[in-house]
Length: 152
Image (cartoon, rainbow, N blue to C red):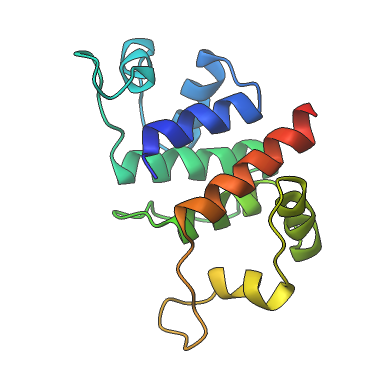
């Protein structure tokens, strides 16, 4: 999925203001201005559109975890240079401190039925023999389920 679209959806799910989003970027050690944020929100075919890099979006997601759960003791995790749907899914799950049953319930709100085993495959190490790539459809369904959960 496109990072800009994900940022829009996440900000809508959590009803985040521009200032809150900028603060979350700062928590993830990334400085984003109001003007840059406006460029991120433009549609892809707009002249002012600017794509959010994977590393900047990873910093935003790390900031979201800190915002929702508090900072860890010691050094903060380094942002990934490349994001996958699996990493994004996991970071949102961590930010909300969701257990497997809760994730399954959220997915079912949006019409997707997964078992615990199927779900755990998304969060395994990429080198694990039962690792499974998270599709755009599954990630989108999870975000849709969060939208339903938080806003009915």
